[in-house]
Image 1 (cartoon, rainbow, N blue to C red):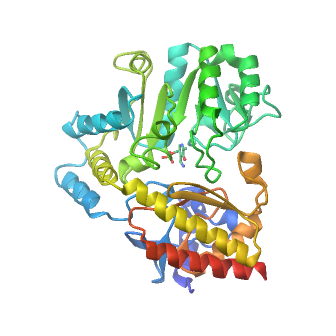
Image 2: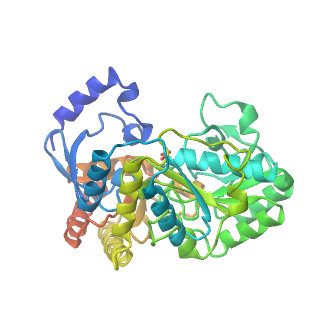
Amino acid sequence: MKRDRSAQLHEEAMEVILGGVNSPSRSFKAVGGGAPVTMERAQGAYFWDVDGNRYIDYLAAYGPIITGHAHPHITKAITEAAANGTLYGTPTPWEIQFARMIREAIPSMERIRFNNSGTEAVMTCIRVARAYTGRVKIIKFAGCYHGHSDLVLVAAGSGPSTLGIPDSAGIPQSIANEVITVPYNDIDAFAEAIRVWGHETACVLVEPIVGNFGIVPPKPGFLEAVNRIAHEAGALVVYDEVITGFRFCYGGAQNLLGVEPDLTALGKIIGGGLPIGAYGGRREIMEQVAPLGPAYQAGTMAGNPASIRAGIACLEVLRQPGVYEEFERLGALLEEGIRRAADTHGITVQVNRVKGALAVYFTDRPVTDYASAQAADGEMFARFFRLMLDEGICLAPSKYEAWFITTAHTEDDIRVTVAAVDRAFAALAK
Ligand code: PMP
C-alpha cells in the first residue's frame, strides 16, 4: 500500500508541529518510527488517508467514536448547535438535559460538572477529594492512564509502601511524593499501601476496567475490596470512567459491575466526538466546588452547546435497544477469529475482551496487570500493526491500546478483519 503523501505531509508537519503530531500516541514511535498515516476523511467504520487508501477503523479516535464517524444523528446535532452559536458563556437548556441523562444512567453522579477533557475531569476529582477529606496523597494503579496533569503522570516506586517517581520531566519530586502507585488487581499491595499511607490518603483513583494497557477487567472482588479498604481509611474512591463510560453498557463500568465510587470522571464517548469531560459524585462531596464550596474549577469552553448537543445525540444512539448486545456479538466474532488464526499459524497470543473492546497481546501469560502487559512482545506487535495497516485495517500504534468496535462496524467488516489477521499471523509465523 503506497503512502507517499502521508510521508511527505509528515515531513512538512515536523517543520511546524512539534514532532509532527498533536498528541504523542499518534506518532509511530512505539511501532518502530516513521511517518504516521495522515487521514483526511472518515465515515462510519472507515477511514481514507491522503493517498486514497481505505481502512477499517478500530482506533475510534482512542475511544470516543463509538457510533462510527460522522453519524448522521450526531452530525445533525452539531450542525444545529453551530447554527445557533457555538459558545454562550451562560447556562443553556441542553446542559441540564444532558446532566439528567447522565445521572439517570449513572446514579452515583448526583451532581455533575462538564469540562473539556478527561484530563480536566480527573484532575478536578482529585482536587475535590482533597478538599473534602483535607488530605493530600493519592493512590493509583500502575499502568492506568488518567490524563496528563502532574499528579497522575507519576510512576510506581519500588514497592507499595514507597512513593512515586515522576513519569515526565517538568513534574516536581514534591508532587510525585504525594502519589503512591500499586499494581492493578493486587488487593494485598493496595491494602499495604493503605496501611502505610491510608490516614493521609485523599482518594484512590482507579479505572474500573482498565483501558490503558489493553483491556484488563478487575478480578472478582477487587473493586469491592478497594472500596471497603479505602473507605475504612477515610479515603474516597474515584473511578476514571473516561474510557469505560457508556462503552460496555448504557452507563458506567460501575453499573455493569455493581460497585459505586464516590466520584466519577467521564470524557471521550460523552462528547460524541467533540471535546468534553465531566465529573460528578455524591452531592455533599461535589458541594465542595465553587460557587457552592471552596474548591475552584472553571472553564470558558465548559458545557459548550456543540459538545453537549453532540453528547446528547451520541447517548440517544447508544440507548437504542440492542446496541450493547451487538457489540458483544461482533466482539465475540472478532475474538474467535483472532484466536482461530493464532491457532492455525502457531502464534502465541492473549486476547482480552469486554463487549466491543479488545486487546491482543503477544505473550503466553494471561494479562491481568501492567507488568504482564509490559511482558508482551512489542516488536511482534509492531510487525503485526504494519501488516494490518497494509491490509487496510487501522489499529492504534501501540501494544498497549485497545481495539474498539463501533455501531458502524458490520459482520462483514469483522470477517474482512479476521481474514487480514489470518494473513498477518501467517506472515509473522514465517
Ligand atoms: N483517563 C483515561 C482512563 C483515559 O484513557 C484518558 C485518555 N486516553 C484520559 C483520562 C485523559 O483524557 P483526555 O485525553 O480527554 O484528556
